[in-house]
Image (cartoon, rainbow, N blue to C red):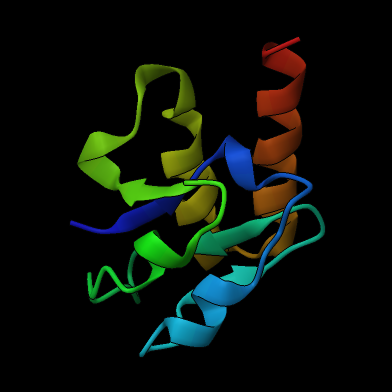
Length: 94
């Protein structure tokens, strides 16, 4: 299991989750933060500090937020890929 940052983080970008992550697997991008699933150790410390409830276990991500599993996972392919997938999500949800 890994944790996923969803749409609620867009524009909020509170960085409390970064401060509590014991392995530094949460990364700031332009509009939000993402969790690198291959680095996450599932400590769950990030989830309760998120003020907008944007962090959930991957298997608990609501159906309308499932794009964010791939958006977070794209960190391994680079920031540009994360931005591309985020733009695709925004275009498809309008």
